Image (cartoon, rainbow, N blue to C red):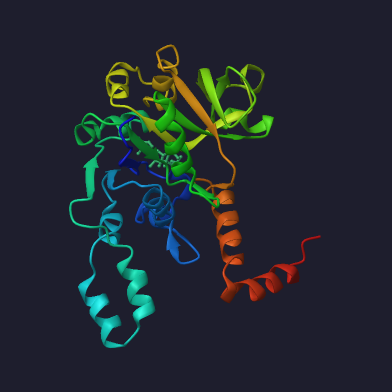
Amino acid sequence: MMTKVKKAIFPVAGLGTRFLPATKSIPKEIMTLVDRPLIQYTLDEARTSGIEEFIFVTSRGKGALEDYFDHSPILENHLREKGNPDLLSIVQETTLDSGTIAYVRQHYPKGLGHAIWCARHLIGDEPFAVILTDDVIISEEPVLGQMIAAYEHLGGAMVGLSRVSWDKVSNYGIVEPETSEGKVLRLKGMVEKPAREQAPSDLAIIGRYILTPRIFDVLAKTQPDTKGEIQITEAIASETSTSPGVFGFVFEGQRFDCGSKLGFLQAGISLALERPELKDNLQEFLKSLDLT
Ligand code: UTP
């Protein structure tokens, strides 16, 4: 039986330049979809997938993120005194138990691979998940939970995969699968942001990973790319030749790239349309827009 995946790393140290000037003073992960910050969606996915320890790789200026998971005694007392139990429980659900949350700093934005490496001392000797908050996935069963279930049979490493249109392959890490059938695919290789002609498939790595601590040794030796960033894709690619290898999990569910303005707006509208208190009025508003 494989060791259970109980820890997750949330790399949130990026500068979020695509959302400037907002991200000059607000962490991207605190920006809201309807009334919940982006980080809440991925945290809930991790929690319902069985994750018990949450490790955030942060950077300067991410204080609002740390406060978000903390107790807020003044606010909680206020809601208690005003007899507002619904809001009180919404606020209380954002608090994580003492000792289950840890923060580690990435001093320079040296890439996603480097951010993950920064958490090495908090992982110890067990498999762990990595979740990118930019990727908000709406699915009946949490995608990470499905991946963990598959991982527990296979071992190795696993990446979340989704098909993207061929004109977008150069925005993603793209995998080379051994076979193209099924949900779980053994991978032969992967390449970060390939030109369309060089892309081995249209299967893109989306921000969900299950890795083992051996990746830290690989990351320590991985050279920065031309932008000075250490890429996780390159490190995982070198693991495809090892045993039991690297697997891709092709998930079902609607995924929004909330690291881009368009994806963020689409996610906000889609999630608002699922709220009974907003749906009718929002639909009416959308219909009233002259979209011709
Ligand atoms: P992105 O490539 O989206 O970079 O990072 P970014 O800084 O967040 O945003 P832009 O492109 O400047 O707008 C993907 C994920 O990796 C994390 C980010 O926080 C994000 O969750 N990351 C990236 C780090 O933690 N450290 C880094 O050095 C780079």
